[in-house]
Length: 183
Image 1 (tube, one colour):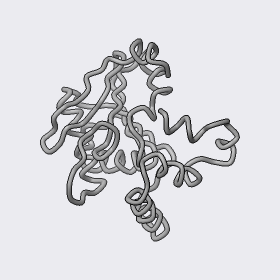
Image 2 (spheres, one colour):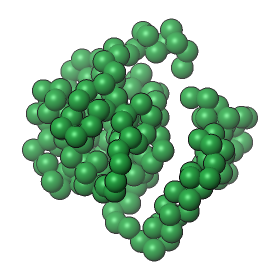
Image 3 (tube, one colour):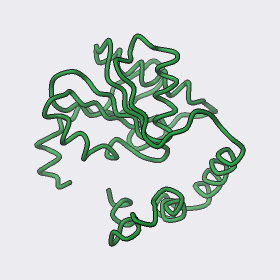
């Protein structure tokens, strides 16, 4: 989206300090809250099209997970459950008791953990292209992506992993990967 469109639809309240890290988030619209949780390697902008549509009726909160986008990088290992706690802490810091939760890919795994460990925060749960647990292939894929990320620039990393992320049909869109990288 253009800068003008971003200014029109987004109220920027860039960072909020949670108990153990600083999270970047955006809050747009008014009404019942929807928390949009992005997938691996994505930032809050992954939801821009949905936020533009849903913010007409709902308060949309999209954020960058730890180690993604403009949120703080953390040292040491962490788990999906820790990221679910981040989402719960974000809602708490914003004074939101319960929200519609939408998670994409790894964000769906985070959303499931949020529902398991903080059910009082979840009004509805929508899971998009996600998974319920780890498997040997998925674990190896994540290990491979970590290895590739350590070797490549952010841009080349995305170029390397996008064939696993986008479909054949997606690749019919001219300059899909380059536009994604720019975004």
